[in-house]
Image (cartoon, rainbow, N blue to C red; front, side, top):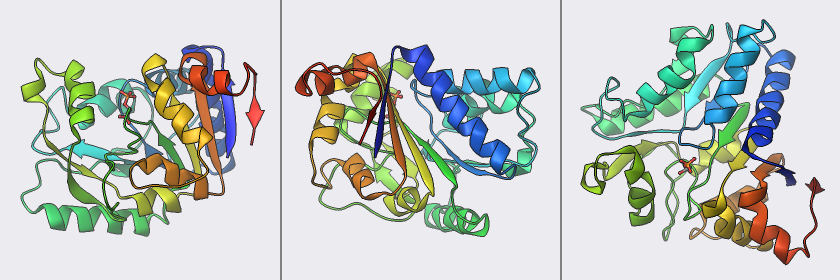
Length: 255
Ligand code: PGA
């Protein structure tokens, strides 16, 4: 696991976008796993900027998003479909047929999950997966529990997640209680992973994650310790407790 600590959110976002850009340049038909939430917004902004400056071409890139709220339509401004189009897809030359996001309105959810996994498999699996992390250690919507599922599935959101995501809704009661998420197996099979963490509220979980050398279903992100090619990229605020425990060391830390 490679641990990188950026000075601030902007620097973290530029580093992430540069890693993604390099991978697209190496493999123009890259299969890119994408995340939503506040954390990757800066990364998307940087990627859009690179595209607009003529430095990056998304015409052959294939994307798969991690998750979607169950019961929200793609036109709902709080859906991840809406987020992805407004923050990223509408501003780059990606082909609509190369964009994949679970259908939160699917009548047959099991079939939708099966179809999504099949599409990922048909594309050859994820080359590069971008991840955020929940305050409870979730990745995608794989929430802490007694077991973690490997494939795409309908899941109940954890109380911590509902609370954290309430900021995107008028009230906490409006936050969907369920979501469709890719499973931990899909994430772990990605060839390369970037985990982004930004802000003070992530400092505790990042210290917990990086100090442990054990995996636990109670901290889904801990399974990343078993992956061959993970870059953990944090801003200083998210790294704060981790750095204090490491005696105030700073800069780029390779593990
Ligand atoms: P955030 O969400 O980027 O909005 O903090 C991350 C996550 O829940 O995975």
